Image 1 (cartoon, rainbow, N blue to C red):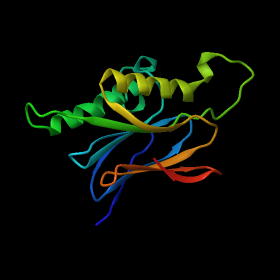
Image 2: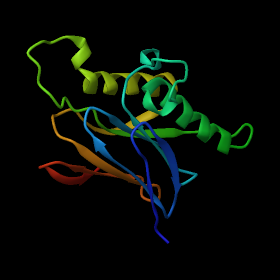
Image 3: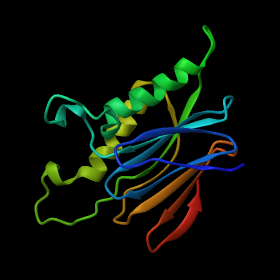
Image 4: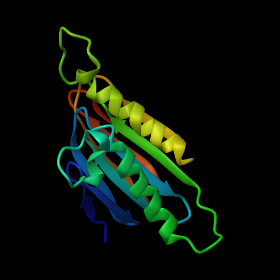
Amino acid sequence: MNNVIRVGMADINFAASPSTIRTSGLGSCVGVVIYDEKLNIGGMAHIMLPDSSMSRGGIVQRAKYADTAVTDLVSYFHSKCKEGETVRLKAKIAGGAQMFQFSTSTELFRIGPRNVEAVKEQLKKRKVILMNEDTGGSSGRTIEFDPATKKLYIRTVNKGEKAI
């Protein structure tokens, strides 16, 4: 039975085939999907900010930040492998829009592009191959990943739907 597993803002979840995994409301946030083709499992994070050093207070909400969320997704797949088994992780990302135009060009207001850059840096650091991306622009997105086909379906506001 096909079941859709939802991922909220600043959330991580996993789905095994035949279930799919979905998040909505991606504006400047980035949806990251990491998968291993042999396992037919996909993990998704809905990342809101580039770096956990931006956290205020004592407790870091790990799924909220690119550095900690990508680390947790990768760790999950390593925990599913037998000792000595090679993990070949691949990724697809979407989101990172610049939702508002400001008259200043300060780095502070470039959250979407900064999120995309941070996610790519974390994937590269952890040797996860980025297969496809649909990032940037100024429109919100909803994404759904099918672990069986490895396709990421992207519905963009006023632009329709596509699969990468």
